[in-house]
Image 1 (cartoon, rainbow, N blue to C red):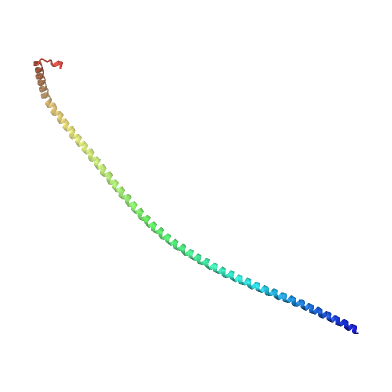
Image 2: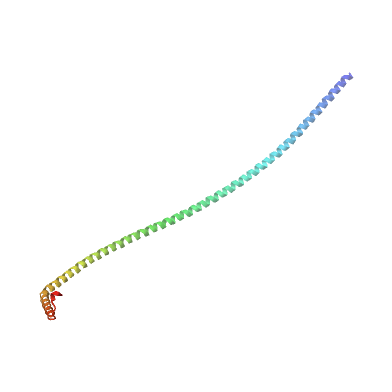
Length: 180
């Protein structure tokens, strides 16, 4: 029986070796799994840190963008108010200019109307004066002609007498008046 015992012992040793080998494999696997787990945990922590950094950076960017957006909105509102005030001022100036232009137009029309009226009066006065001067001139010329007609017979006598006397004087000098 001892051989059987030996067999049992061999079997038992072999099983022990198998158990030890299995346990060693198991421990190796457990160590590798633990190492992998540690690596994954470290990697996960690194990724979580990156994610937190990215979130923090995203929040900072969002905050900056929000600040810039508010600043732009305030600037646009300020500019809009300034432009509205400028437009209001320009409208007031335009209204004043239009009123001044209308007043100047009315004044110019009034002045032109007065000028036209004065010119019409002056033309009428000139025409009246021309008519009076023409009447005076015709009256004077008619009077002069009447006087000339009245004096003409006397002048004709005086001219004939002078003519005869000069003719006689020429003959006394021996000249023929017809040759002259």
